[in-house]
Length: 453
Image (cartoon, rainbow, N blue to C red; front, side):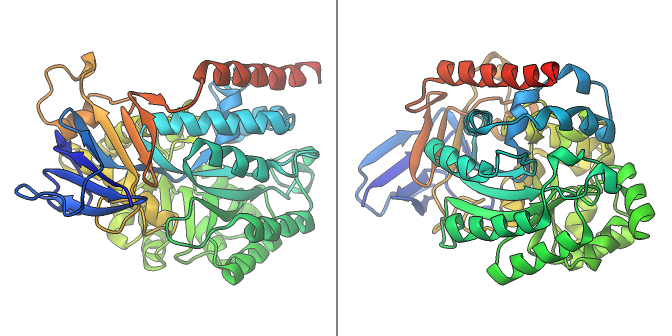
């Protein structure tokens, strides 16, 4: 057993109002003691980490992302478009993805997230063109090497534009293939134990890109194997119109009709719900991942976080795709969430503590995890530590508020599962310039495929 004391933090937010004035004690992969004002560690300490210059948080949890989209940031043909037109511009580009592109985009997204204080990330990979059938396997292998905790979703698209859907036919898969691969991935990679580092969820992309039959079959598989369900829902009013036209149902009614309206489902975006739908989502304990930067960039709208939470829904936070953000910075997303929610509700009703909650406890609940998201005894040792020594923090007074309001951008230290992954603002054991070079070359090669096509 190794005992580490993260001692005397400048400020700490535990997520549960516990006294941790004198820090946190970690044994192996777990938090074993919160050291109060007049207390000392109960174990024999092997390592002391001086946190007197750090703001300490539970590791941030990113509940919705598309790692592969790091390859198409600020893509010219997709600029200044709203969701459906943006997707139609990018579907043909993404159809050119290959295994190396998945490898480098996954690695870069995971590293970027770690550097921003994120310790758990969910990725929604739904575009699997011919020749890329093992995309999720590559993501598992690559993300495990970075040391970040993941919930990787087996996304899918089966409804082509010739069938009334949005994606072009060469970007979709046969439903039998999707189901077979979903079962394979669950059996091979899904970890069920507490502290699981790799989990699999099932994630048909959206009502406008998969069939009703696939949604129902996926729900049945998820129930049989006790894995989570994820999809995009109510991101835009165009989607609402699509559901009314194709199914004669509003999106939440459609969700219920395919057996997705329950606590093992979490949704990305969830912007355009009416009052009655919010009550139903809350009663069913559905999770909703708020994606503020993406929603602003695509002008999709503002999630109704406070109404959803009041109704009983789980509300988390995600950076969404790096082609609609265009970044993978989780601590920056807290600032965006706090500000856009203030725009909806007023400054007195939304604080930095709300942003902390959405990005930790709320996101963990969305992913079906109760072993992460707070700093308390028995939880996994996922910790993010930030310094306030940059020029942007000069003159700030409240350290916790400053982290959000002054725009923290990079963590100084990050621990995942009791292991330090970031130290002095750098990822341990990584030559980041080599990664950036490889990633840039992959992005250029993807764009050149589209140009030659």
